[in-house]
View 1: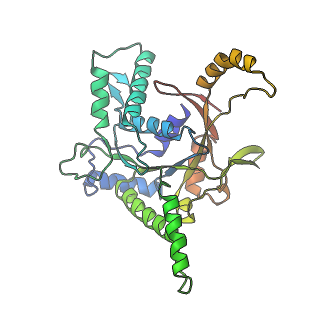
View 2: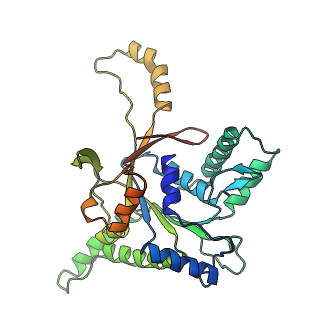
View 3: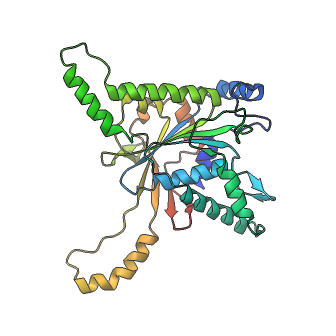
Length: 326
């Protein structure tokens, strides 16, 4: 699966005796080794090109792969067995949906291996895994995930307060029109955010995943002979420079009713159209709008995943299907 390979590539692998304590010798030696190879652990941003773009569903999938174990009862689940720290800034995260997607993934792994778990084992496995998804800061001395490495820190809806910050920014500029020119309030807050997140990332050597929504439409340009998507970010430069790789996530269009169709014809085709919508796909594409200023480590990531430019996935009632690659 394309996104799984991308996730596994960008996440660090925990040594068997590591803990969440950044002062622990095994973790610190691991971080020094990792940072010696890569100056910065990647920062991944999932940008929704439109409402209901599928970015949150993709996030659920990434979280599930992070907190599930690599195997359970001799069945390979391809999980990372790490802890995840979640900041749900827009209060839209659904643990029930995450649980359903994880259950579907476990069942898919069982089907692949022609295996089955004992009654209640899947539910118990998912519940124990969800204990390592944390939406708060923790005390490593007594925390349930104290023996796990932090796999990722997630900022869900990092632009949740964008309009409030822009309003306060505009108001402060009006009041201080005759005073010295200062950094805008919006840029200042994102600068502080980046500083804090970068400090946590340095302590735990973990992947940072953020989600946001686009305010502009997706355009395309030609790079190396191929047409690639471009989406100008509406967030401050300090944030855009912090992000390593940005994925544009959107729902693939479904054919609309043709012009001039009668009401009777629309009713006749309603069932077929409903089926087409249920089978519709979502796409995630690399954002190449700032590829000319990518750092060498970013280019190395793109090269390591063999120039992956796009992958396709489906969102169903039971889970997320990641099967097709482009």
